[in-house]
Length: 305
Image 1 (tube, helix red, strand yellow):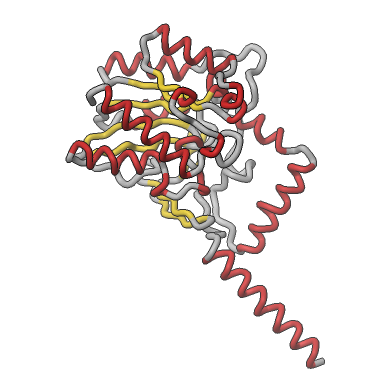
Image 2 (spheres, rainbow, N blue to C red):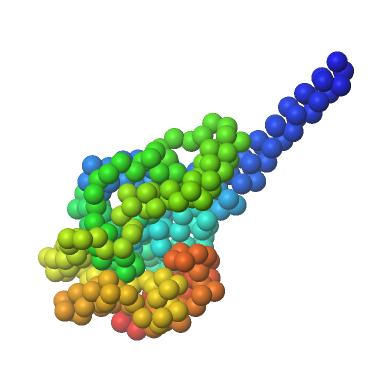
């Protein structure tokens, strides 16, 4: 009897220690939460300060992954998907947009905010819908950060929030359950090749039949002309394109659109991108984020911003 009580007590203590470790060290039950939106599908919930996988993530009252908008600052808008968002695997201070805000403020001797308006798997049309809803915040310039697959990554408004493991609207209440339900179960699902269903719903697979070139590009062009706010495209390559030293067919279409419409375009294949800058096949690690920031800084200085 005493042995059973001892074992039970040991398991309870072990469970409590594991729960505290998962919460305090890895930030379980503290993930970035997302909400649905009728105009641009989904976005991070406003006013969040999270600690997840040893990284900090901040979202302001406009759901930007940035500090609160300062009305007295010079503002540059950076629109994009998970490339500039970074996700919970990128610390707030390691984001290219955070580095740019700090660097540009020091260079020009005044507060400059390079605002991060992004969400995983957003396309140009998601971004333009956000711009249309919230305005440009008096920005002096707009940058669009996208990859080749975004040429046809159109909004479809299929339910993603709470249907996809990375798009949760509520926190788990028990860290150990989150570990099992969100990560271990999904690992098994991926091995059963169910991940392709999730990526199909997110619209990040290859160009589909009868798909149209994303209207967000032309919408930003029209907005830029009407408001006299310069817009620049930054085209990010994935590791396959880096190895081939060339953007794929969809990337070439984005380049052609930019050239045909006299939109400045920055190609990271021409700016020293290396495999060591990636954390996976497409997302940048901290070194890659810093390199992106340096590329934009040089571009702004060379173009007399």
